[in-house]
Image (cartoon, rainbow, N blue to C red):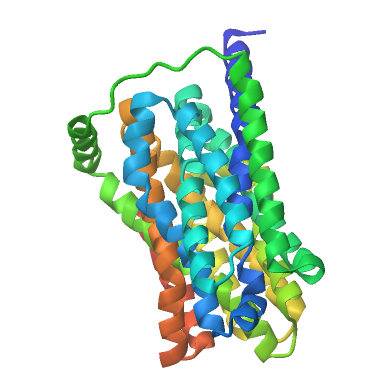
Length: 393
């Protein structure tokens, strides 16, 4: 083997180790993210609330996920990323079980919020861990492999939620999510038994603030964070409205909405399989532009969908387009502050999930003012503009 071959083999070995240890935890956090979306109508009926109110369970998960990031990042930089991931995945399982036995919608919202807060310690810190382990040359492909676990979780959450809800209700769905979280904890415990102890320093809020000032001072930081927030809102804000849209058009129900949302994850898996040849052929900017066009076509497909087949294909295209854009933003974010990578990725996640949490609210307002089809059309135009601006940078 040449020196280049040996270097590549070493990078791939480090990549595989990170994936084996942290992949199940990433899966569990993603699995629980959108599982309430296909069950909005059922939850609304049980607690005698509107579908719009039940749809806020998505925001109840993603907003605390975002708000906890400025705390988790510097804490993880101080006491160890692996330790924080382990604590968070354990808390995720406990909070999901508590949500499953909620006696009122208020308690369900509270435990859903606590679950989102716990889930905040999985994906962002794993991205930072992968950034530490793998050099920039191989990092975009490495991050796409982490996305496979996150995407698989989203697929499972979308596809499995409908059938499980039909058999065991939405409470059964949350119990299954808790089991996935405890499996992720088990994988981390096994890995920790043979791993070197992480270095630990005293957490200092002053140092944490200094790190954040250094990250924000990077000229690339604010444009990246703004872009990922807008992207998150435009894409994920659609999910709670898919079931009502299908029901209104008499082309599906809760279960079919789960399939359309699951197709989004399948589109992400397609991207993960194609990312290396796409980058070689079109470069990072070209992939972003193609992603913007693909996502816009998907949103237009949802707006006009006359059948379940079209809606499902739109979900697939939306996933493919989204990850073409998002993977590039993630890769750039890992280089904002190499010495405080957990803090940088936590700010990235704060912006992304903050945008996600506001997305359903904005789409809901658009639905009331313009109607959902026109709102989706406006979102299609917005994501094209976003992709073009990103590609220029």
